Amino acid sequence: RSDLQEVRGTGGAAADIARRFAPTDLVLIANANAYLASPLEAVLAEFMLAGDPGAPARGVGSADAVVLAHQDRTPAGLMLFRAGALHDLPERGYCDLKEQGLPQLARDHTVLVRYAARIATHPVRTLMTYLDVVRMARGAAEQAKGLPSWSIVEDGAKVAPDARIVDSVVLAGATVGSGAVVVRSLVGSGGVVMPQTTVVDELRGPQGP
Image (cartoon, rainbow, N blue to C red; front, side):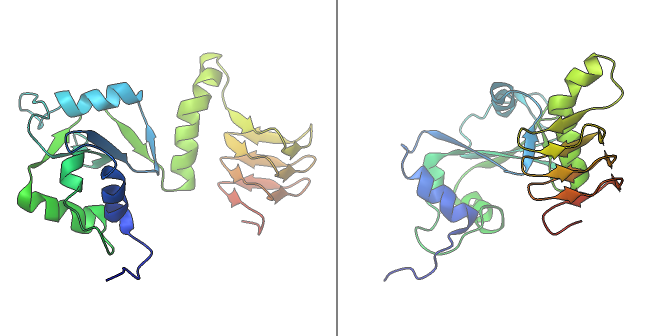
């Protein structure tokens, strides 16, 4: 019987992709709305070295799925699977990896939680967390120079020479008028900040704030 449901869910998509790999291959799945705090190689090492808080570090060993968490027990948004375990998820229908996939795998496979020794990821869920990770990635150079603030203006953005951009991002296709001040904000493509306007803590898009 053909599956009439086009959306497979995160678990279904992971299973479909994993079927391209051998059962013993490892598949790393990461939340898209997260910023890696360390190079990927270092994050992968956390799966092998980290252990429960206060307990000796343990390797992945024979586990079929490992969920990485931080020391405060918040999820890091990173999971490592043996492809063969993901093969056992349904071939048809909707399956959310966290809601349905992991509980199903836990019935027949070894699923472990590992606690990272250091912060592995930073979630990006709001404007402020987005600006925080941009500051981490790009603002460090400005801080190293002793500059009190940072800003990113992409090529293709129209920003007046006398406009002030402070701790903010202006993307290509955005317009910031003469004398405008943009603070802790993101001006997206098509967004307009009118001349002599002050914008603080805003996400400015084509339709305004």
